[in-house]
Every structure is written in C-alpha cells, then in structure tokens.
Image (cartoon, rainbow, N blue to C red; front, side):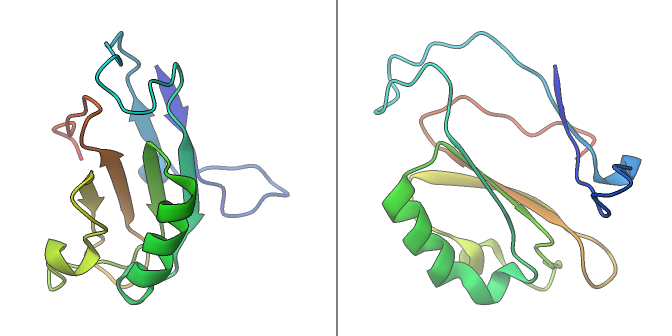
Length: 121
C-alpha cells in the first residue's frame, strides 16, 4: 500500500489526514496497456481551479502521455459537470469535490489500466 500525502508547508512536512490518499498496490496484467510499462507514469499538478485549465492540461497530457494524472486544488464542485473537465476518451476521471471553495482532488487514469474508486472517496 502506498500513501500519497500533500504538504501545505514544506518546511514543517506536516500533513492533514483529510488530504491523504491511500493507494492499494495490486498485481495486474499490463500486457493490454499500449505503453506496456512495468511502472505506470505519473503526472501530478496543483491546478488552483481546474475548470479553467482544461486546454492547458490536455496539451501537457498529449505531449507526455502519462498513465495517471493527479490534480490537487481542483476547486471543483457539484455545479461543474464531468463533461467540462473531460480530457479525452483515453482517461477515466475520479474526483473528490470539497463542499466549500478551494481544495478538491481529481485523478485521471488511462482507461486501459485497471482502476476502481474506493468507497470512502
């Protein structure tokens, strides 16, 4: 199991438990994956309002072709439909919106990689 933490103050290296994401590592068959990579490539960014940066993210993704994209500070809410944050048919999106302004996380996983949303997210 891998825990991904976000740090609000790099000097203190503290973390807020609400900002932690637990990723369970499983054995999987990647032979159907186009890149056939042993370890998936990861792109992480702090968007500070994702909805207005879809074109920019799409361009970066087209160049780098990562397997997994993690976006912190997505600032998404239930008022913003998935169709607005779609970056193409090759990725499935998983989002965790905050009930208040700011925050939120968004993950894009290549559709040919096995992934499932955990019930607590």
